[in-house]
Amino acid sequence: MNRRNFLSLGLGALAVSMAPSTLSAINFRETKPKAWSATKVDEAMTELFGTASTTEGKVKLKAPDIAENGAVIPVTVSAKSGSKVAIFQDANPEATVAVFTVPKGGIIDYSVRIKLAKTGKVIAVVEDGRKLYSASKTVKVTIGGCGG
Image (cartoon, rainbow, N blue to C red):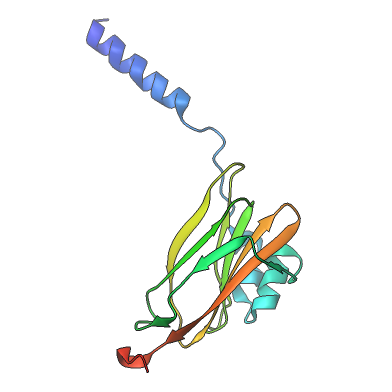
């Protein structure tokens, strides 16, 4: 074996050995199907977390006050710690928008673009330990880009 092949095989083995081996994802659409078909936010929260009672605080939700295009509304959720993050809204037929499982020690700073058919409230919920923390914001969707 020549030196070039030895180095390429050695570096390849090193890269594979350093790759995370405990990556896992939960498909909430399969494990919690009723949460995705719930039409009310409280129903969806109960399906995902077992309860709909939350405490305000420890979660930051960033969304625009007025969205000129309801098809692409930027939403950012951040928190210092947590194990699960969910985003809900009350303007569309299905209340659940997204659910994320956070690995231990993971950073909660998620940005997504959501779709709202009309003016509605966006709610972010973070599960930290056995407690639920939330933040909410009303987003006004204007038709045709008129901000009035």
